[in-house]
Length: 101
Image (cartoon, rainbow, N blue to C red):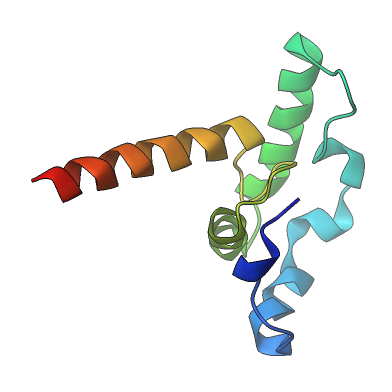
C-alpha cells in the first residue's frame, strides 16, 4: 500500500493532472500485473503500459507522484514497480554517500 502520510491532501489542484492521463483511455489491466505473472508475459504487459505512458501529457506529474508516495504496484509515469525500487535504492545510496562526505 502507498504510504498514506505521503499522499497530497484533498485539494483538487493536486490531483487534477490525473484527468489528462492517457491511461484513462486504456485498459487498466495493462498497468497492474496479475498475481504470479512473470517472464516474457509480464515484460510485454509492462512494455504495453509504458507505450501508453510515453505519449501521455502528464507522465512527469504521474512519475513524480508515484515516486513521492512510493506507489508499490503497477506502472506509473512509465516506471514499473522494479524500476521505482531501483530508483529508491540509487537515491538512498547517493544520499548516504553525500552524507558521508
